[in-house]
Length: 120
Image 1 (tube, rainbow, N blue to C red):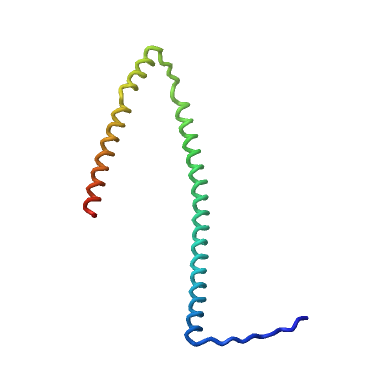
Image 2: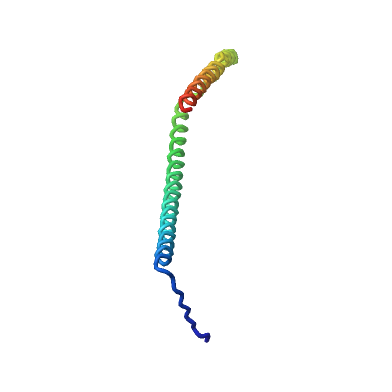
């Protein structure tokens, strides 16, 4: 068996204090990191539990919707009526929405420019 040798080192009092405080701060930081990771682990577990719960609820909703749809009669729309409904869908609703979004974006850019001017 190998002999145990002891080594003694002397430090100045202020060096010892700063070294000791550095070591204690590192230990405290490591404990904070461990606590942070423990919180992340708990959040991950809760997130997965909520995902499963949400999937179950969505499946139940889908089953209820299917049951409701079974109670409605099947409607057969004649070809002419189908064409009219398609024409109604093509009345440019999407264009007005995209126009409105462009207007909102332009106004938002103007406000952001004014804010930049005020900050400088």
